[in-house]
Length: 66
Image (tube, rainbow, N blue to C red; front, side):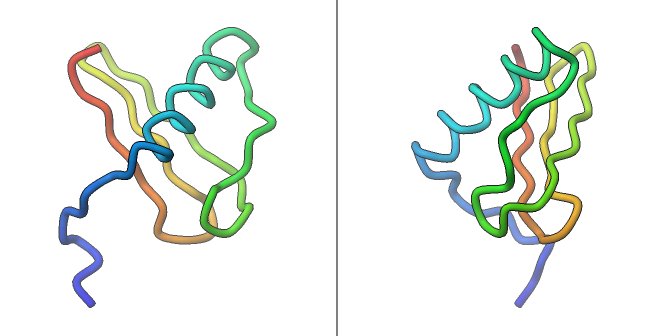
């Protein structure tokens, strides 16, 4: 399996990521866990968007143009 291949993000994942990032922005952290393995989420916010990835598995979503 090519772990660098792009995949379609589900609507549920989009909602999860938006909620997790909103909580992270407001509180500096989130209590949400990875939807794939319940691992800790890591955030990287930049001017053009942000990314969320799991510290334990391959879950990663990048949001551009916020």
